[in-house]
Length: 140
Image (cartoon, rainbow, N blue to C red):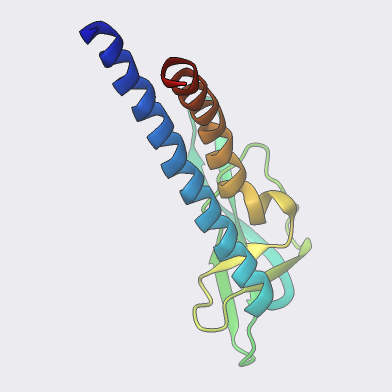
């Protein structure tokens, strides 16, 4: 009995972890939804790259320049590194930023808008299925 109780606790933990990650994914999704509803859309130009050394390659973070709603030039360096560089210098992309905090900027693309939600929920999904299935089988 004690052995099976240990498994119930373990799978309960997986279920709770999956629920917590699902909540995080939902929260990230709602932040993006709010940004899309209240943010300011504009165009940004790629003016350069911040480089860093990866395991086997040089990684590139694009530096964007745009004019905000107060006609001030702003620059933003992406937090995402990639190889190869995702854009050419002088490429123009559509962005959206928070009027109150111009450092909250996202490129208007599916991956840039929803990356956090998708990845977090991809991790949560198997934990939810495994935890719930075991508990439904054991306790049901």
